[in-house]
Structures are given as C-alpha cells and as structure tokens.
Length: 198
Length: 198
DNA sequence: CATAAGTAAACAAACATTTACTTACTTTGC
DNA sequence: GCAAAGTAAGTAAATGTTTGTTTACTTATG
Image 1 (spheres, protein in one colour):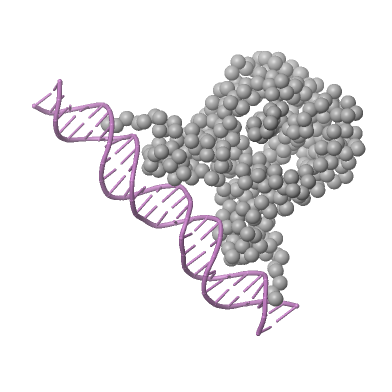
Image 2 (image 1 turned 135 degrees about the vertical axis):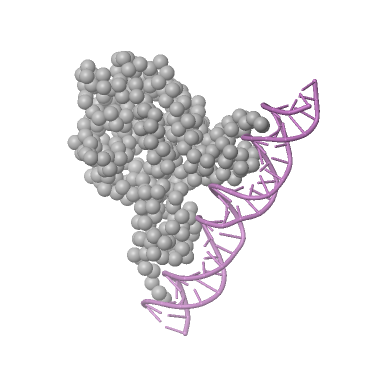
C-alpha cells in the first residue's frame, strides 16, 4: 500500500498555523488551507475527521503540548520561589517569541469556545497541564514564602503579564526598535516576584 | 416618513454581543443574528454598511467607549500611585463582571485581526484611549515612585492580571463557589502595586 | 401621499465535505 | 527475481449547505 507522505501532514499543520496567525482563526477555511499547502481538500480529510478535529489537534498536539514541554525544561517543583518563576518566564518567553504562529493559536484558546472546551477536556483526560507548576506553588505556600491564594489566582498574577509582554514583543517587530528584550523580561519578572512575596 | 425603531437597533447590538459571548466571534452570522433579533437581515443593513462595520461599531462604540468611561470614573492623573491603581482595578472589575458580553468582545479584540486593526485606527483618529492613565504613569515616573518602564509595559504588568482574574470570575459562575471576590481583587491589586514600587 | 423603515424571498459566492477516480507503493504467487 | 493484484494515499471536480448581501415589495408615519 501507498505510504503516508509525512511532509504533507506537516505542511497542513504549519500552513494552518500561519493562516491563523496572519488572518485570524475565523479566516481559516479548508479550501484556502488546501490551496496554500498545494494539496487537495480531500487529503486533509484523510488525516483529520473534520475541521473541528484539525483545529483541536493543532491546538492540543501541535501547540499546547510542545509549549508545556518547553516551559517546564529544567524547572523543578523543588526550586526556590524566585529561581523557579524566573526559569518559567525565561522558558516561556524564549519559546513563544521563537514560535509566533504557536503563540497566536495559544491566544485564540482563550476566546474560542471550541478550543476552550477542548482544553478543559484534554486537561481532564490526560492529566493536568503544567502539573509541576501546581506542585511548586503548593510547596511555596506550605513553606510560607507566598500567601495562600488559589492556584488560578497565581496563574493570573504571575503569568498573565508575561503573555501580554509577548504580545507587545510581536507588535514591536513591525516598529523601529524592539523594547521587549530578555533584560526587560527579567526586570518585569522580578517586579512580579516582589509583589507576590509575603 | 417612517421613523427608525430604536428598539430594533438596540436589539441588534445586544443580541450580537450575546451570540459572540456564547458561541464565539466566528459563529456570529448575519442571518442568525436577524433571526434571533426577530427582524429581517435587510434591517441590519439599514443600520450598518456590512458585517465588518457592525463588528467594528460594536467593538468601539458599544464596548470600548463605555468601558473607558467606566474605568476612568472618579480617577484622576493626580492621584497617588496606590490609590489610582486601586481605583482603576475596582472600576474595571465592577464594569466587566456586570457586563459579561462586553468583556467577551473585549477579549476578542486581542486575537481578531479585524478588531485589532480597528482599535489601532480609532486610537489614532479620536485620540488615545485611556489617556489619563498614560499621564498618571508619566507623573509617577517623574516623582520617582516607580521605575521608568515603557507605557505598554506598565499596562502589561498592572492590568493583564486583572483581565485574567475577570476571566476566572466568569469560569467560576458555573462552579459551586465564586473565588474571585472584590476582597480577592483588592488583595491582588495590592500585590501588583507592591511589585511596581521602587 | 411621499418617503424612509422594514420585510420575505432570493442571489451569487464561499463554505465544509464527498464522490469518483488515479497514483504509488507493498505484497504475493510463480 | 519480478510482474500483477491489492490497497491506502492522493487528486480534481462536484456536492448540498450556509454565508453575506440585495432585490422587489409592503408598512407606518410625517
């Protein structure tokens, strides 16, 4: 039997992410994607059940999974608070600024009901995403380093600013000079850490 | 001549916001909107040039404008840092939690290329949004209260966590107990302020 | 009546998806 | 060894449906 052409499968994913990043989720159509990837629409349906299946697999397998891996690289729940948070910020910043299209889809995960639902479900089915980070916070609270906030509140306080800064980073790629540098990120991270400590 | 029925105009806007909040921006169609508002599709085109025009006017006039007004209520650029930031957080939290559909469209402004572009343009044409906040930061830097960061960086550090917390607030309306209360918001705000001070 | 607001029904274009067919590779029988 | 059968991958073109928008007509009020 004729073997799958893995290049085509990869082209579908890469080009879908490009279209989403450049024209938005609502402007990705199966026919546009097929044309841009130089394949027949049918070929997409050999690899994905339908458009929903494609979007969800793109989001979960192509973006969320690799992002989690990158964020948790060399991070351990046993690290002290400042070291751990800085490591998470650095990993996250580097991954997202080097993977613009992944970042774009990640942002869509917040507003798209389809992707939001898929995330909740994947979180239940295959264990919680970013589990080591949850353990990390639990330990920090136990050790009395930070206040006893809910996990979701830590996420908001510690990581929402970072994603907003990555957003600014990409806004600034089209302007004369980049203001969001690794140095600025570190300064911001330290400000956030300072606010969280008891 | 037959006068405009203002109720119908309002119904269009209100129901459009509802559909966006419940089904997402990509699932708002002109025909669905007309049906839900109990009017003919043509009626929408009497009031708006096309779908883009409707979305942009919804975003700018119905959501962004009123949000700015609410956020700046009783806020003055001359306030001291902690008082000013707390006022902005409180105004913002109250407005957004009481206007769920407005918040949903506001969030879409970040990911939708159409709305993003419309925002940039409106910002240029009719003067900067949230201008008093910019003056506020300028003064704080001058007085040496906070470090000399770029305006966009302040926005990320000070307000991104708040929007994320509002997001959590609505996630929790469907769960047993609300964890995002005004008390929690105030605690979080104080943490953010603490991080920013020199 | 004059006129703009409003409607029901229809329009072409674009949409996700399928049908009917071809291609390219693996396996099998000799 | 190797050709032909078998099979899934892949294609071009078309499917029925939904989309944004318009046409041709009716209604309500100054």
